[in-house]
Image (cartoon, rainbow, N blue to C red; front, side, top):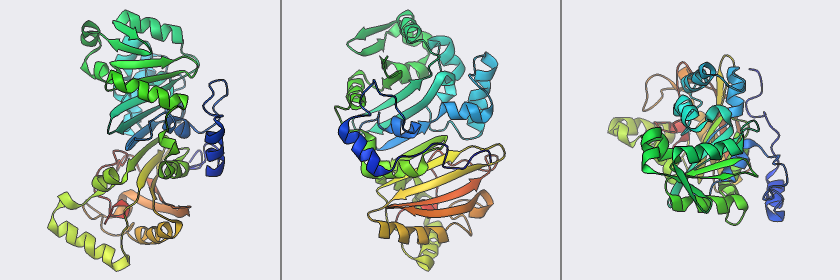
Length: 356
C-alpha cells in the first residue's frame, strides 16, 4: 500500500486540541489551519450533530491519479471510479460532479474536502474550495443561476431551481460563501445556515468539541472517507433485529461465548484507499479505557467465523489486521477488497460493531 492506513497526516494529541480550542487559535481566519482535514471538517459542524460524513476529495483525486480533474473526462472518472471504490458514499456531491460543474462552475473536483452533518435541528454540508477556485467566479455564477442574497445566505429562486434540477436545488438551495476561509456552507433550510456560520466563527460549540467525537476522529484521521454516528444511529445501523429470530439467536450465542457487548457513545468508520486493496477502521468510544479494553477483547473475538446476518464468513470480506485501544476508543482495522464489499454506508448487520 502506498501509505500507512491511518498516518497520512500528523494528528495533534487531544490535550493540544483542547488548548488550541481554549485560546481560540483555530477560530482566527488569519491563521493557517494546520489540523487534519477531518478535524477541520468536524469543527465546522454544530455540536448537536448526530451523524457526520466526511470526504477528503484532495486525497481521493491523488489516490485515483486524477490530479486537478480539470476536464470533463477526468471529472466523470472521479465520480465513477470513486463511487466504485466506496469513497463517495458519505458525500452529497459525489453523484453530481458533472452536472454541478456545468451549473455552478465547480464541483467535488475542485474541493479539498466535504463534510455533511445531520442534527435534530437541521442538516448541513460544508466544503472547502481548492485555492485554484475563484471566489468571485463562484458568487457571480450564483447570481447568474438566480440566487438572491439576504445577509450571508444565498437562496435560489424557483426558475433557478428548475434549471439546476431537483437534486442540486435541494442540496444547494440555501448556502453561504466564506471568502476568508474558502468555505461553502449549504443547509436544508435557510435558517440553519447562520447556525453553522456561528459554529465556524467559534461563537457556538462544534462537533469536534464533543469529546467522544473528537476521540473517534483522532483514531480515523488520514482516512479518505469517514462516517461518525451517535449511539442511537450506530446501534440501529449495525442491528441484527431485522434479520429474524434465528439470526438473533445465533448472535446471542456467539456473544455469549466471548463476553458481553456494551453500547458505545459514538462510533466511526474510516476507509483508506490503496492501489490494490483498502483498509477500513471501525472505532467505538466507550465510557472508560477499561470498558474500551474489554470491548476490544470481545469484539476482536467476533471478527472471524460466520458473518451473522450476512452471507459467508467475516474473514471472507474483512481480514483483521490490527486491534488497538486509544484512551476510551476501541479500534478494529481490517483489509477490505472494494470489489467484494462496501461498508461506508454505515448500514448492515455487523456483530463485532453492534450494541447489546
